[in-house]
Image (tube, rainbow, N blue to C red; front, top):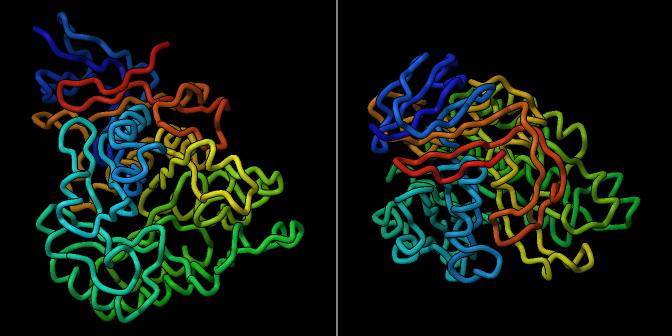
Length: 415
């Protein structure tokens, strides 16, 4: 007998959490229950751990093709595994842009940590002409976004929604009005005024979401709001859901944990897209995630090389990495129970992708993460090619102990 047993954990499956062991043989979950026989299987001690479906990230920048000095697909997959992720949705703002089927096929990976390509809504992400939507769909793309830029032209977005809606796909929007936000580097508010820095107002996000929700009402297309950062956006999403519109939303870990006061240091690691907002906004997105108005967590993992961030704040690129720290930051910031935690990190993203959102089931291919909520670790020796994170060298609570896909233990933390 050979295989793997995850012993002594709290197994989270669907809406239930039960003390049980999990046996994996030849990549398949063959038993779930208390007191299972170990035989000569490899043992992962999951005492005081939560065991559930591997996390899924709906917002990962892998930088390949075109910017491999920041990250490439393999280093991104390594970072994902270390963070408990077994699937990531790769954003299309690459070079070349994922606006055609052949580029999507170059990015897609089906083994190990899955890489699922998203496709651009418009050619080159320029917001003018629709991308090769049929080609992208045939290549397996189900999520369409111009992430990094907003589809500002309402007519273009309407046509995209009508077509993508007929296909059965999802339109995801980076909501930032280009006119209202032109020249901004951080949140427009008391801190930006004190620093004398051009700001990005909350209304810049909210007017795009409000407009788009009217287009959802018109077209019926499924719509997903990326990296929600303001209290007003949470209110808009809540109202849309009450009205029965097919709307989902994500929040990034850094918007759950940090506010615009951090920018007073002028450290470019705090420059991100959308910007860090006010403490009231942080409270609103935390509550929105906890109560389900915001469906899931998505990292917006955005690697940048050290030389790119080591410049004055205004000149620095936006974004931070997040795959390896996300579970800890979410756990520390929101403190959800294990079923809520796995819903927001694993099950809801799968549902948005149209995949089975079930948890740990006998007969299923192993796709598992072991998470120790009360453990601690230090953010160092990251597997990403970049280290642009405000938590570098910090001690965080909540440890990804192991990530298992099929017969392979993709990650196992020692100690």
